[in-house]
Image (spheres, rainbow, N blue to C red):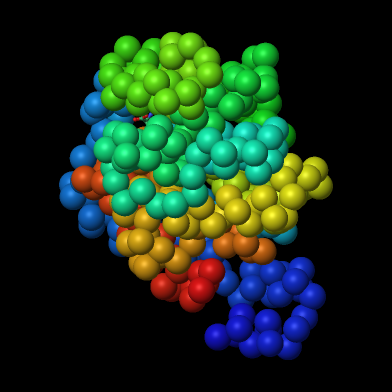
Length: 326
Ligand code: GLN
């Protein structure tokens, strides 16, 4: 209410953000949510289809927030690293767009798939053109685009995330190798798209870069920091570096809202009301443009591959604060 009133007065955006931070005790809010959400433990299951992920402790639970004016809030296991998995698809897309701009959309769509993240079914009727960059097929094509333009895509990806003020970022080689050795569906997706001419590089090379991206390990706090440029029109707060144009940033946020949670994207928009992205490591990160990034990690997943407690915690956050993009 207060925030809406402030907007109506038409104050400078920075003043609004500053006052909102003053009015919202984010630390108390996430501590409360953290305490209450523990009751949902045991409702989901840790992803086991990537053998190296199966050993993760299901009881881990962290929440972090970083605001664009530098406020940092954390609770629980917010400083512990975990496998970001499909959250990396956002970095992949951002890097892809920064390299080729709108040309990217000749090779991947921007519509919700309504299907599982690793689904093959639409690809045949849609001639090897994946629905969007946040399902596996789409991210594999964007990875192929990176390979078109970068000599060392694995290194460049880490450098890109480091530009987002996340210096402590690395691949987990064991997770990357584990996924590559068992990722038969992803292998099928790449082969299938290659048969339509939508993969230019060797299947193995594309899978290697993709599996490395998925194996990146980050903390909730690091994820918030690295996503803040999406809450700040494409400029990294703190360094002031522009990574994307404001229009490109708007587009990535729009695709996160409509496609960030696969066949549960509608449910996430309805319950939470923020653009965001999940991964089967149990992480979810979401942004409120002009305000903040928030990340939750809880490895127990629902049958769509999204963190049960993560979705609940974010729903609680927008309900309790009255903040969302709507
Ligand atoms: N590495 C996972 C896969 O390709 C990523 C999926 C996810 O996080 N939803 O299957």
